[in-house]
Amino acid sequence: MHQILHHPTPPDFSLSGVVLAHGWYQLAPYRWDADAGVLHRTEALPGADVVHLEIEQRGDTLWVRPDPPPPPAATAEALRRVRWCLRLDEDLSEFMALCGEDPDLMAAALASGGRLLRSPTVWEDAVRTIMTTNTTWRQTVAMTRRLVGVLGPAHGKHPELRAFPAPEAVAANPEALEMRVRLGYRNASVLRLARELAGGAIDLEALKDPTLPTPEVRGRLLELPGVGPYAAATLLMLLGRYDELAIDSELRAHVRAKYLDGASSPTPRELAAPYERWGGWRYLAYWFDPR
DNA sequence: TTCCAGGGGTAGA
DNA sequence: TCTACCCATGGA
Image (cartoon, rainbow, N blue to C red):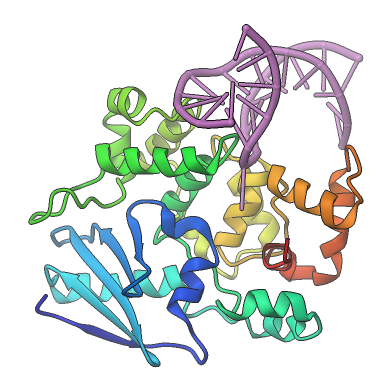
């Protein structure tokens, strides 16, 4: 390590809080060292060798150690990605203020300040989300590890470290995807998504534009292969839009047990009812709602 | 063996 | 809009 990048954090920011508030840190190429409080991530930057990033908080400063140190343009890009992943630019003060009226929710949300870890690219988050559908979390972890291990670009000095594969790498290796990554029927969706991105038919990064109306973003997400209502709502959350609940088996079980007295087959409207009053913060209100 | 897990796509009504 | 059925994979 020859280089340390310093970056200021927002007030009351907690790296461990943000990391642990969501399961994404368990998915390659993320790795969380709980003892050291260091978030590891291998990243492929344009115009640079694959770098390994160690991200650590010291007081109100974020320390980012890239190995090997990339050239200036790639360094700026690395920091830009870290900012995005940790949502350093996202203003969640309104949500936190509303939490003030709900002590249980406040206690749960306080550690992360409402921030949930995400991936640098919408492509990566889309693939991860598709890999959470109709499977167990355990399988999602395994699928992601295989995808990165088989198709991700390797670090020069430490080839066991790999970055998340680019769409081009997935599109160019359909056999490896099917035979070695083993995504089950999700394979076809991920392959199609990779091909559409690699071929320039779609631009997922454009969905980060905050001026786009949420219904339009949702509409474009629903057009993606393997993305239905649950995945679209999850991706909207990952894009910083919290209006819509991702109704899945987990949410269903939680709302049934906590608010519906175990009702047998609640409708989506009944499932959403407990969080209606949260308006544009519904997703976070559910997410931090104690079980 | 059967079921199903943080669903999606399709056909048919 | 709603329902029924199928979809690979791996664990219970």
